[in-house]
Structures are given as C-alpha cells and as structure tokens.
Length: 410
Image (tube, rainbow, N blue to C red; front, side):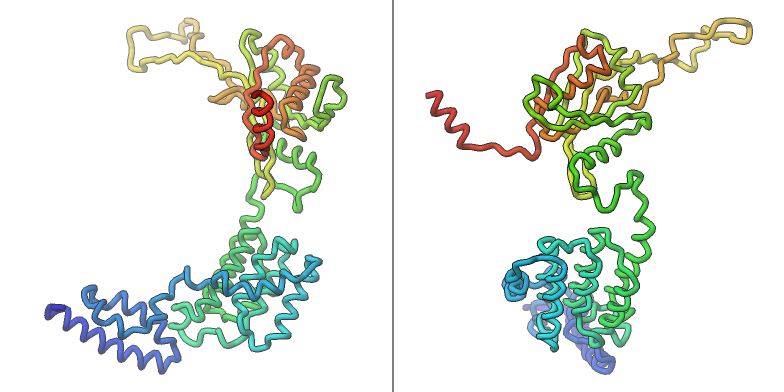
C-alpha cells in the first residue's frame, strides 16, 4: 500500500502524540483503551486506518451506545429472580432486590439485574412507584465509579453502568415520576457529582416540577377505575364550550334497544340551537369511532356532525375610488359585508352538534343516543340521520364465523 509523504508525517505525529497521551492517562488514572477510540477517529488520517488498525484495542472500537446494553442471553439468568415468584406485588419485588443484595455482595451482574427488573415493573404493578426506582438505583456499588479527574468525567467513566442508570432515569421521566433528594444522594454515592447520571438527575429535578402542571386539561391522579367516570372526563376534556352539559343515559330505558348499556352524552345550548336552525332537507351524520387519550388510557367517542356552512367569498378592491361612500353625510352603510359570527362548534370540516361515549360503541347504542337526543332536540325527528361508522379500533373479527357463513350459503 503506497502512502504519501504527508500521510507518513501525520501518522508519525499521531503515534508520538498517542505515546505521550498514554503516559498522561497513566498518571491521571484514566482508561487509555476507552480514549484510544476517540484519538483513532479524530487525529488519524483516513488512508492509514487499515495500516494501524491492528495496533488499537479491539474492544474500544465497539464502545458505542447500542452495545452498552446487555443481550437477551445475558438477561436470562437474572430474569429467573422474577419468574419464580407467584404473588407479584410491591412487597415481593422489594424482597427480590434485597435478596440479590445479600447474596451477591461483590455486585457481579448488577447491570443485567437492573435491566431485568425494569422489564418486570409492569407485571409486578410497581411501574409508577418511586420507591422501587430508588431501590434499583441503590443496587449500584458505591465509591469505585466516581470520576477522579476531568477526563474521566467527560469521557463516560464506567460507560455501561452510567448507561444503565440513564435508562432507569429515562423510565422515570417517561412515567412522570420526579426524583427527590434521596435519589440524588444515591446517585452521588454511586457515580459522583461530575457524572452524566447526576447531570440527568439535575435536569429532571429542574424541569419536571415546572412542567408538571402545564397541561391545560388536568386529570386526577390516579385516574378513576370506573369506565363511566373516564368517559365523563374525556368529554369534559374535549368540550370547549363551558355551558356544555354532560348527561348519562341508560339504554335499558328504551323498549326497542338491543344493547342495554350506558351512554354518556355532551351537548351545549348553542349546539341545540344549531340543530333547530339546521334545514330539514340536509342530513346530519353520526361519525366515529375516534380516539381520545387520558394519560395512557384511550377512550372511543362519536360525534353528531353536519356539513359546514358556505359563506360567500366577497372580494373588494381597496384601491377602487370610483364609488366612495360618504357615511358622514348620511349615506347608509353597506350591508353585504355583515356576516353572522360563527360559534366554536362551527369548524371548517363540519358543525359539531353533539359528542357521546357508549359502553359498547355499537350502532345500536348510537341509535339509542339519537333517540335520547330527540327529547331535547325535537327537530331531529324531521332531519335525516346517517350513520357513517367505521369498525371499532378494538374490535376482533372471528374468522371461523365467516367460514361457517360461506358453508351455509353453499
């Protein structure tokens, strides 16, 4: 392989710099193999990579973020701690952590243990418990992973351990769990104040209390378990009109109803007035289902919609001076520009006349909803109502039923 004179000089400078850098790392107690990769990429000429690649430590070249996490094969022995438990709750989860700390005092495989524990948080119903996250952070050994100088602090000292702790803090941030001072003391004892883990903790401690109440539609914490209360919260979240009334109906009160389920309806006096003003020859549509999210719970809802109103597009030339109106001399003001202001329910894609959530999200339950609306909106008796309903997002189609119908038809 032919190398030019400039490349040879640059390579020799790099090797001499790397030798001196190795002595500096030795004096400062740094990990030379870890920093070798950075010098390899920044200071070495591109044409010399193949020549000097054998001179570098192979493990340092693989030190990237995606390779810091353990594989499924490495996690399997640690997952046995959680698979063998029959009663899965917070008490048993904390006992598993205590048992691991007492059995393995040398702290071998604690990274794999923490990753395995994070996989079983939801199964043990402790995914939103801050005490569990603090207990997992306390598994890290204390003292030996604290950076001793600036180079260790900046170049990801004990990279796999810090990556594991960052994943744990990311899970807390995703769940909306703000760390407290006790969590900070645990991080200080394990990684030190100059680590990336402590910087992540400091950012969370600064921003999460500020953004906690930024949601304009606050929800109770925890959310109620009753599906009807969740439907009421969803309708209250979507209805902008403060005069909206949310009423609950029971389809069993109707004689012809097939689905004996509950119906939660939301409608304001303005929407009732829009129904009264709606022409009888134009239909209204029942559309849905649509999804609305309450934290991590989704609810389906349906709307009663009419076609949008079309207003005339009047173009006026402001520079036209041929016919100026003199209002100060008693001439009447033009009336062709006066347009009735639209309400918040009149959107560009349609007029929303009502919203509802039902227990079954079926067509029969929506038909019962329209029947209940006719009690407060008598004009719905003379307006055609069309159902344009898609399949429910959570519906399941049984294939054997379709095969049986085809056999009967044959």
